[in-house]
Length: 414
Image 1 (tube, rainbow, N blue to C red):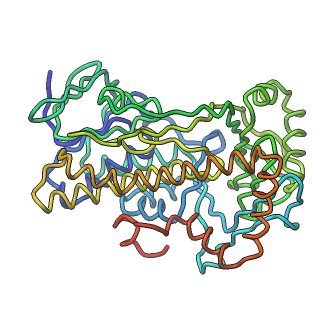
Image 2 (cartoon, rainbow, N blue to C red; image 1 turned 180 degrees about the vertical axis):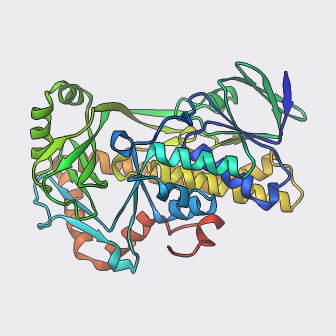
C-alpha cells in the first residue's frame, strides 16, 4: 500500500524529532503532512527515570532556543531531573592540577549569561520532541525503512509494511543511515580506535554546576553535572583500555575513575551500569540530492570530547527549516535541489570545520605527546590568561557565533 504525504523524516532520535516539530509548527508548511518513521520508538507506557539514563547531551544556548522554537523545552523541563544547567566549564591537562596553572575555565558570568547550557538526558529530549511533533499534527509511526525509490515526481519510502510517497525525505537516522546509503550519498569515515565509556556516578563533593574535563594523555575524561549530586561520566580511551575498565569490579572502577579525575569531586562511586561505544569520525561528501537531505549523525559524526554532536545536528535541523521556508516563499517545492543545496552549503562547511578542530584536540591534547602536545597544552594556558580569547571560546560553546538559523536568532534569551 502506498500512502501520499509531503515530507518523510526517517529517524526519531532527538534531531529527527525536533526537525519534525519545527516543520509541523512552521506556517510555511501548515497545510503539509509531516510523517516521522522510527524503528525503535519509546513506549508511551514506560515511565522516564533520569537516574537510569547513560547517554546525555550538553545542549548549548543555540540548541535550547531551537528546542523552544519547536515547543520542546517546556515539556523537557517538566520531566523530573531531566535537565541540569551548568554555569562553568573547567578543563585541565594531566600534568596540571584543577584550577592551577595550565587549566582553563569558561564562566557564564563573563558573558552575562545565566548558564553555558544544560545537561539533558537523551531519552527525555527524544520523548519531549516526539510529543511536540504529535501536538503540532505530525504523524509518528514505528517502521523500518528498507529502500528509497527516486522518481520524476517524488520519492517512495519503502518500509517493512507499506510505502510512503513524498516530495522530500530527510535522513535523520544516525551514523549507519539507511537514507544515506539508499540515496547513494556515501560517507568518509575515520576510526579513532577509541571507545567512549559512559556511566552515572555519585560524587563526594558538589559538582558546582560545572562541567569538568581532563585531558589525560591517553584519553579524555568528562564529568557532567546532573541532579542530586550525581555526574555523568564520558571517558574516551583506547579500545583495549575501555575493555579493561568494563571488566573491573564496581569498587575498583570507582577508584580508577576517581584517580583519573584527580579527585576534583572527591571520591566517585559508580551508580549505574557501564557501557562503551566506538568512536569514529564520519563526513558525508554530499548532504543532499534531489528530494533528499541528511541532518545530524546521518551527515556527520564528530569526536564527543566537546559534546558538540547533537548541537550540530539541531543546527542542521533549524538551517534546513530556514532553507525550506525560503524556498516555499519563492515558490520552490521542498525537494528542489536548488533549495537543498543552500542548506548543504550553509551547514557542511561549519560541520567540517568543527570535526577537524575536534580531531586536532583529540590528537594533540587528549592523546598528544612530544613537542606538538606540549604546545597544545601551553595553548590552554594562553587562552586561560587572555579574557578576550576565553570569552570568544565561551561564545562559540554557546552556539551563538557564525551564521545562525532564525530559530536561534529570533528567540530571546532565557
